[in-house]
Length: 201
Ligand SMILES: *Cc1c(COP(=O)(O)O)cnc(C)c1O
Image (cartoon, rainbow, N blue to C red):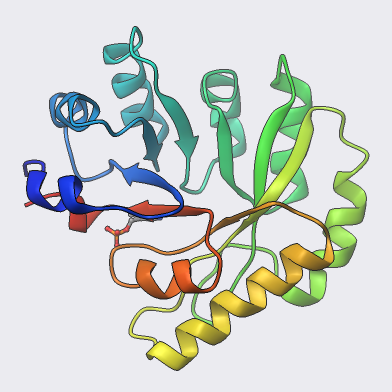
């Protein structure tokens, strides 16, 4: 897969565009960077480390957007700028233990019954309350993945619900919207969109 230059050149959105790089090699990541993309998001620790090493001298903001296994925290946590998938205390405990500085985190909220990851809306208040005690974790926002095949109305409902929750807790950032649904997410106030397939051809 290669970079879809035309798409990237015409993309003009009022949000941080994170390139979801799980589909591509480190060389394609360099092409993205040379086209002006400076926010990268990886899902897997091994691919993250490979790309991070390769692009080390570049001015890139690194996001970890996939599920992070607790045992992998020590390998990546001091290299990333944002974690988008904080969803459990065991992960928070490991971050607290391994982080050398405060880590900016999004709490991942579960927006669909078939999706396993993420804190449910019912559990959010108590999860957030306990997280305040962690000195190495700074909650900067909320992240969600909408259901596959959701209608436009369902998407709006999902994204508006996340936006209200963030507002209620005074959290500035909303990481929501992927290739299929980023336009709806932007309408609902996304500050960070995570684009994968649409960036490549
Ligand atoms: C792959 C991925 C994306 C991007 O998905 P596309 O549909 O390819 O745009 C966004 N967020 C996460 C967490 C992902 O794993």
